[in-house]
Structures are given as structure tokens and as C-alpha cells.
Image (cartoon, helix red, strand yellow):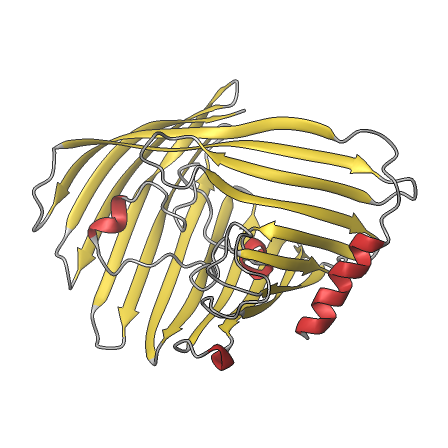
Length: 331
């Protein structure tokens, strides 16, 4: 299957004719800043903390003479000098009747297909870029990026057929994010292969999205066993959206189950409220439960007011509480 995926990527790239005109480049991104009042057990913390998450995103797109779309994306971390990796995801792509091929330092295809909880507070609770939940040392994101993350890889997506889309990814070296690794050296962290399927459609008056993905580290590389399996479902009807995902994480014989779900209610076109619940259980019985309640209101000009109360109950590190108010700017 890996050879088939590589062959598909090679065929897409080597059959691309000359570009009809220059690549059009756009710049966008977001800046999310939240002020938190916090109370964390077993840790000497400040009463007030500030958390930022920001990216500047460059996108390029053009058309070849025969109508294929080619382009690139480069994401720059912009929240401050403390960020060690200023260039985040970056990749090129080719898109046509055959589907879409991405090559570069990017998340795997099933990760990008994954259906998850609604963004009640305007940001992805399942990604938790604010690190508020890192007071729980065993907290794990319910995302399929723990094996290969942003390592250099090939992603392939089929065309959508009756709402269904299949995807596959191949990562030659799960530790290589720069392309500086010796091409013919076999001293990396192993290869990984991922497969996914996503459905988007309507059942009656309800909008339905569902996804399933699996990502596995090649055991022939001598690395410890690693596999992620995730199922996601989202249903929207009128002002209500219910959604979430369940993921099983296996590492070296140990297993972790993660359930992350939520409910969103739209008060108007500009405002919504809801809650998010994160349940996590270890092989040894240790549990982590997070409950977050709040909402967001669009203020106009790409600006959203966000607010949330987040409570953690952790068998390992004790309990924590956070209350945050912030601004999310998109440009």
C-alpha cells in the first residue's frame, strides 16, 4: 500500500504541466488571547495567567495549463519568543480529478478528516493549545497526531463520492520534520501508515458528519508498538450541534481511552453557548475528567469574545479550576 501511495503522489507531481500564471499568495491567520483566573492543586501557581495561541498562515494557489490546481501552505507560530518551532506545518499540494496529494511537514490525512466536538468557545478544545489542562500530566489530546505529528509525509485524499471520502498517509521517518535526514539512512524513529474515511451529508433535516481513522507505527523498524484508532460523529439540527470523538491510544502494550464530546446551542448568528466533557482512562484505572462550560460572541471585524469555566478532576495530579475570558481575532 505504501508503494501505491508513493506511486500516486509521484504520478500527480510528474504529470503536472507548466503553470498558466504566477502563484497567487494570500496571508491570513488568527490570534487567540485569554486571561485566566486559576486554582491548581499541588502546584504553586499565580492567581492570574495569560495564554496566547497565534499563527500567520501563507497560502499559495495556481492553475496549470490543463486545469490542475497546485499550491502550498506555510504556517508560522506567532505567539512569542518562547516558541521553539516557529515554522509549523508546511507543504505543497496537487489537486485534480484524481483527488488531492499533499507532500510536506503536515498532520496525517485521517487527523485532518477527524470529526470532533463543536468549537463552543470559538477554539478547538480537543487541541487545547492554551495548555490549561497540562496541569494533568497524563492529559492526552483526542487527536491522531501522537505517532507522526508534523513529520514529513505524503497525504492522499480521494474525490468525494456520495458524501464519502477516503484518505491515506505514509510517513517515512516519524521524527523528520525538516527534510535534513539522510535519505538512505535507516536511523530514524520508524515509519507510519494511516488510513481514514469521512462522511458528510444530510439525514432528513439533520446535518451529519462521521469519521474513522487508524494510524500505526511500522513494527519492523524496531520501535515500540504504537497505534491510534479514532471514531468521530457530529449531528446538527437547527441551533443544536452534538458531537465528539472516541480514541484508543496504544503505546508499548499500554492502552489509554479518550472520550471528548460536547453540545453547542446557537443563541443567534453571533452568539453560542455550550459545554465540553473530556473523559480519559488509563490501563491501571486512573481517570481524568474535564468539564468546560461557556460560549462565544462575534463582535464583528473578525473578532470573537470567548469565555469558559473549566474544571479538572485528576486521580494523578489533583484537581484544577480555570475561568477565562479572551479575544479571538481571525484575519
